[in-house]
Length: 205
Length: 284
Image (cartoon, rainbow over all chains, first blue to last red; front, side, top):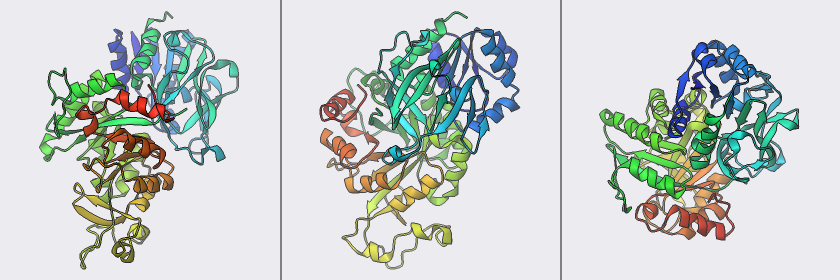
């Protein structure tokens, strides 16, 4: 069973529907024991970084996230669920993250963004640097749906799975041990997005 | 590279698509869920539902449409029409909408956009603007807005000399489907809405809407250059060159169209192939 962590941020139903379409049972939950019992865990999320961290704390879910990752079972982060894994974010001053992957979350900025809109919103292509199991069916340079104004900068470039070009070449997904986490939204990316959810659902812990 | 988005728009009334749609091979041409699926299969980048249901009692129907569509379609879904309070947004997001589009309520109460973006995040708040090229008002015209005299908003209003000058490249915000002028400058309004947390602007030219002679390129470009959030061009598409112009000449980030897709004049795929051949980045 797949546990989708519900901490009051974002449209979780679409993630659940995506798994169901791929023949996988998924529950939306904020019960720590359900998360710990699940064979796979998904951390989704949209909104602001500090709000997301605060909600995770308020619902008492930080421990469940850390234990799930430490247990070695497949873990999927989506959008904010990628960013939260990092050390800190510069969204609204400086906010502490879960610090599971060393690095920062920074805003798209600089002269190269003079003619680029922020948020980075829409379908952009990903260049595959390393291929985690979840990307098994995804051709290089496939398009996925993005909507975000901040992006991750890992200290260890070895965790990068894909990069995407928007003003700069930014990290659009990371793969570290049992963690695969994407800046884009597989659940909003039609057939190729569902292919990611399918492969993730098939992984063994 | 970020691709340009093609967004079909469906007008939904009491749970049915209106304005006519003539797809083949659909069990029910008026069912928004079936039509959404067809556009999904053609590779639409997003889908917009505009709920034109008149009565508040029927609000629940659009929630059911959104819920059933979100079961079937895995792409971003925007829903507009009739949003008056924050709970309307919450209910649409819970039903499966990714974004909501707000028009009249933003004009009546600009602070609503601040509250909505603070609570739900800018990424899901689209401000829809219906704009018309300025024409002279009645002599006794006053903006019909409670906040019209608030000094912090004074720069939003068109000057009477601009309104009286037919040469002015200026546009006025209208509500009620283009019937009621608000005295507000559309470009200044778009900037204010960005400042208040809108994540995107859906810009409809009331002059061009339904004309099939192309978007108002001057308007679209003026707004797109004035704000740093994405702008969706809307109103007036009759052929694929109009969409090309919307992206290339008017700098729109996304193009919305209804009838050319509904009546099968062009498929989404044809549209994207046309654009790609002409050097516009699209997702095929």
